[in-house]
Length: 587
Image 1 (cartoon, one colour):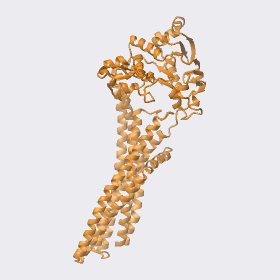
Image 2: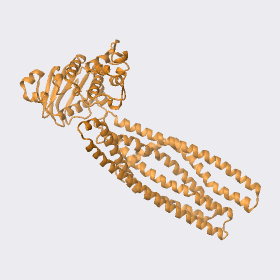
Image 3: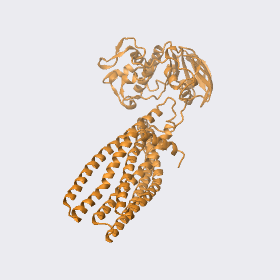
Image 4: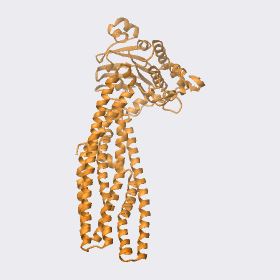
């Protein structure tokens, strides 16, 4: 067993154990169904014995009525057992998907590290489905076992030799089937890994389709996906061959076993040790046990695939958080935040001891000579990671003493590549507003976009400041225009302005904005810069950007170079006095 298997088993049994009621109900009904199936050849043998051998017509009719009643019972048992099994499988898979989504979206993060979004989607769909299917496999296993036990008991009553043959031969076949499932388990996990990678690459390429077309990289992208897809196909074929080989060998072994049972029964009948009805029952039982034995081959395959998928799910659920989930200090209420940011010796990635004091209500621009410095700074401020050294303090409290949720409730980090969601433009703008009424609303309303749609004044101010009001007027239904997933129905500049409006509408005490106007023209960029300054007046705002228009509206600008603060001053003075600053923001 690999090291990932124990937590995988824990996930497997927790998922199935959570559906204990349906599993038990399905198992009981399934056992009733298989018991009825096993009794059918026995009842047919008794009917033949009474009606054909003994000529007892009333006895024949009696056993036929009993046979009919058994058929009705096993029919209903099968129906409701299958319903309970499907319900258990679907519900277990649903709970796993919910747990996976919760872990991926957890404030401490870490689960998505090293995995493409498409890979996580594959784990939450196919792997969860396979683990859920184990619930049905267990129900079938109990039912098949009941069928084999009843068959063995019936055969023992006919002949001790036949009964012992089944009782001793069946465990041997099950053990061989378990051994044969091992290669399938290994190859099934590899198959799921390759399929997840292919899904992840496909989702990645679709998301960047416009960029790929713009730079003429379609052929390279196709070649990349072809390689990954071929690897996935090869893994799938290996898993299919392993499953086919397992099923084929198990079928041969099962057939040989049934042939031995039929041969022994025939010889006993020829010697007169058993009667005609008992021979019919024996042959019927021998043919019946083909079903339960074949089901065990399917059960072993499902368990093998379920264990492999459970191990993959466990890797995501047990992934260490990027930051601790809870802080040691009490949460800071939004209304009580002054907005003082202090960076002391901050070191992370390319940052090498950044010292910075930002007063409450101040608007500060941060220009960098290396984009990686901006990324590292944003990750520390948003508490997506903790600094390697030094501290970031909010009103004198280190961010590491607060939980990620507490930090993000008072300090919003609006990253450059923020996605939009399915819904309307207005839905996206108000998505970050925590309360029922939009933050900053004053009871008034304004008409934004076409159709005379009324929008609360606080949201309208954010839309005007970001230039989203112009976007809405250009759309067919104004702010109520539908937006497709990730905002692909809008242009890059439109998406950027809507995302900025969402950040401004949240009205956070501290707002960190990263390059909010790279996809708009110079006139719009200047308007956005002035709008941010107006809307954020009196609240702490950090503009991480190399845009001259945005830096010009900041109270002061900080230049980061080689991981440290190289210069501080207003934009105009830095432009005139520092060549490295001019190179960073004007080149």
